[in-house]
Length: 422
Image 1 (spheres, rainbow, N blue to C red):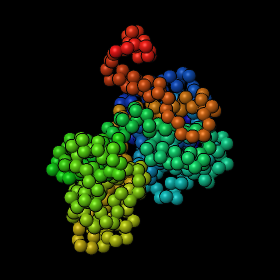
Image 2 (image 1 turned 45 degrees about the horizontal axis):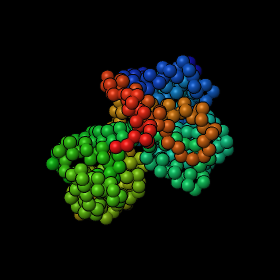
Image 3 (image 1 turned 135 degrees about the horizontal axis):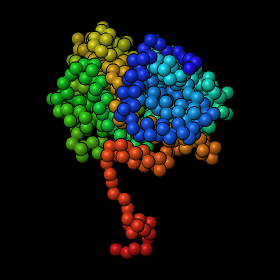
Image 4 (image 1 turned 180 degrees about the vertical axis):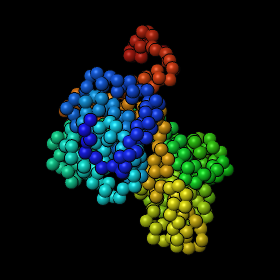
């Protein structure tokens, strides 16, 4: 096997990376079954895919499924702190997949890697935050005619794509993987909920029971974080801008209040909004000594880290695993996890493989569907076909040994008719 183009941190980590990829694969039976079919049918023969995603063991298994289907792949990282260097090494040297990713790379290197992945001249793109698609539409426009479509994995990325489409900037169809039930109901809720708290525990070893945990944002990610924190004995406070979501949180028994009030009482702050400056200087000035801050939104804009850097009298870098301590002028110490970047991947391992099994199954099947249907879609953001979402759920249930009822012919006829009275 020839070594593909790559830029990784340490080739000697490849064997260890392979073991971790194989470990994750044990918990991804749905993607495994899709990969086995792809290996026979080769739906991606002649297709080049550029992917900007978190370079983790779970992503590796998605890449292997696509390669089994005949795709030529170039993978780069969607976050500088999420790259697992052993996984990157294994993909290159054990599996022959082109990877451009190093843990902790700077901003310039990050975009160099995106451009290196795009050099493959892709016909399909996979994105996780819209940075690759944005780069295509700004500095790599010469490649746009060859791109037939792609998939976006995250809430933040889908928001950006909708804005591009609204402005008439998007030039090809993108499938909103994030908006499928088997993605946002499980990945966002159960995955983000568990992995975010995992990051906080690894970074600080704090006890959540009895603590006031402030969750900023009550979408699917926020719901998952709030549920898990409540289950650990925390007093959970939710902040929101959407009245419907705020009402939902209230009806679930959480205290709901503006962040300016929550900042005074919180022990742990977790941002999951997808927006910027959710925690900023007025909140930092009100926080308790020892307050912990973690962001589980995709980009590092939810916590105003620049203000902390400019105004703290002292910074104790990496006082613990992926934890920086900022000392304020009055002596209070504020703790920031993973530099304000995506905490569950910066300070932990991200979502459990069993959850990503569904998300990446959605992605693999949507990519297969695009091969046949992209040319008839036009530019824009499209939902994953319902039959794909249901098939992933069906396969997941089967892998768990769970059976469900089926409609009888009479029931099906009743649901598809209108002439039955009360």
